[in-house]
Amino acid sequence: MSEFVFLYRGKDWTTSPAEMQQRMQKWSAWMKELGEKGHLRNPGHPLERTGKFVEGKQRAVVDGPFAEAKDVIGGYTIIEAEDVAHAVELSKGCPILDAGGAVEVRPIMKLTL
Image (cartoon, rainbow, N blue to C red):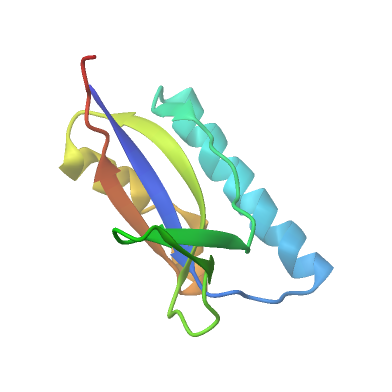
């Protein structure tokens, strides 16, 4: 088994409290299912909608994420799966997909220091 990170990408959706509660129930059910099947290594956290980018040799610091971005990384989860194909299958249950968002599935590289 290997570890993968799910990066949740989507727009900044504004919803009613009732819609938000429905979404959270779907997320909770999906996370519970991943956990019960032994795939949930770390549920992760939502990310704030603010931040900074540090880039280039000059280490320039700019505000981000940018409003003009097509999508924003809203959070992450670390899961365990047999391989990337299995991780992709697990990601297909993510509620963000129903709202037009996306899940980026990335293998976590093991480093030995």
